[in-house]
Length: 594
Image 1 (cartoon, rainbow, N blue to C red):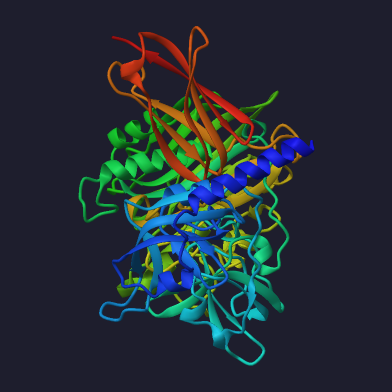
Image 2: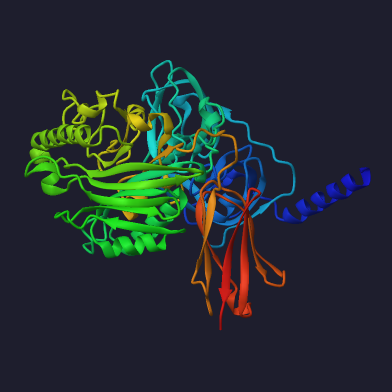
């Protein structure tokens, strides 16, 4: 054992001496160089990697530096000792004409990094008070004691929050889109708490970036470990003018929108998607046919407005019985005829089959010029629909879900007015408003110009005993620019135990999936891998004779990864793509034809 340790120590020492043939400069000296200049070499310990999006952070005894390099961000871990070479110094997020108002970072195509094979030592945060936050501590890990958050409720990713100390000084706490605090919608602490995070800067304003739940005094996160095939899973999602060819309506790049919607659906894997703002059945078919698995669709052709309602459902778990519009109210009801769209179906989960009726709705939107009229119309529609369900579906298993275009616990029109949906929320004996707690916690399903919780799910009392949980999906954790490329609404999902309650610790969920395209392939091919949780990823291509061709072996963040397959080197025949992520194995067939 002593000999082995000595050999390892000698290797590390030799490796380090070769690597340090040219001594690195201090990070403090690197930060003094001109913008646009090349920093020859710096070294330090990693303070943040996949915990935050876009950049990694390192620091030495003299300062900290942001590293804008995705390969490094996903390859290193907190505490790693790294050397960074040939990075170009740049400033991100600065005010035009005001240097020093953004985040100083290293990047560029020539940047190289090396992880020194030595034990990890996590940098200790520097104790700091709010008045001392400035350029001298930018990109460093700091701890601020006894702060109190101004906001209440739950955190969301890609949002800023305010915290104050006991003398009234305030600081911005920025929750990054990839940070587990936002993606898990953790509760905002209500009392005094020590906050640890990286000091960043944007447009001249300094902000603290927490990395982990523990950085804001919360316990480590717990993961929902109930497998998808044990529950009936339904998702409501407004797809923002999906299928429109008009680039002024919804995202401009329509092909990218469809690809990204498909990617999100492949990660959700719902049994039923209740969809709003679908323009054409052709676009719906293209989406339904592209989702991983066996899916079919229904499109509400009888709706006269351009924005229609639709369903996509899993044919392996859902047997449709009938569909139709729930015509109720007067001539102006439901935005002049955009009536709730019903689907009656049998759900097959485990050994149980259950008849359920779901209504997909898209309520009248609010126009600033007619806000009170629109509010009154929504309120009338909700009251009429509540009576309709009472009269015709009193003893049925009913789910109402969709874009309600307003809150359940109030209204966006006037804080003094009651909710348009009071007829449902006050009828607690017959209806469970599963999204009301999410709204009460300050979360937002609409991420457009004026965030709010507009997308809701109601369950009739017959399903109350089967309800497991309702939650807000967070596709932003692996899709950048989500609100401008995909939709201005987030998906909202609910899960039901129609086959009885199971142990929530039964098995960890699968956190990724594989798509092969094209398949079969002849000259070019690729594997699209959605990694929703991150970890150690290995991808191998295995021939029918057992030959293994390694393709990927690295640590990855939550992301959409594209792996190019070496088709030109392959003979005709069948192969298996084997992906291992955190010891969970997934496979996909690959066929090569000439």
